[in-house]
Length: 71
Image (cartoon, rainbow, N blue to C red; front, side, top):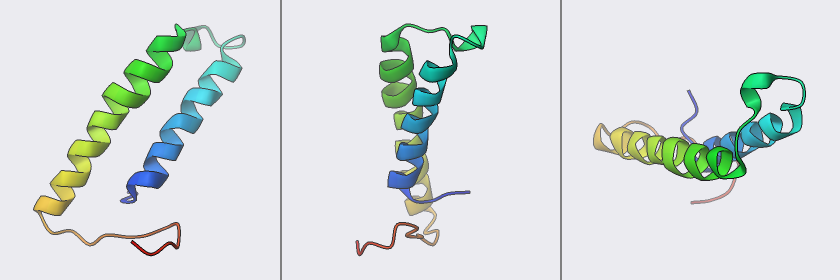
């Protein structure tokens, strides 16, 4: 389980780029541009990451920094 919000968000955006680049090969990847970025990245994944981050803070779980920057 990844607990770094920036890393999870980058993974979400990267997966949407994969979907766009592979939609000519896989029929289930054919979506509108607003569906892949607005609905998937911002609303569904973004809202889930937001809730998950605050859920972990509520239960005082240990935070990990996989990017090596000081926060």
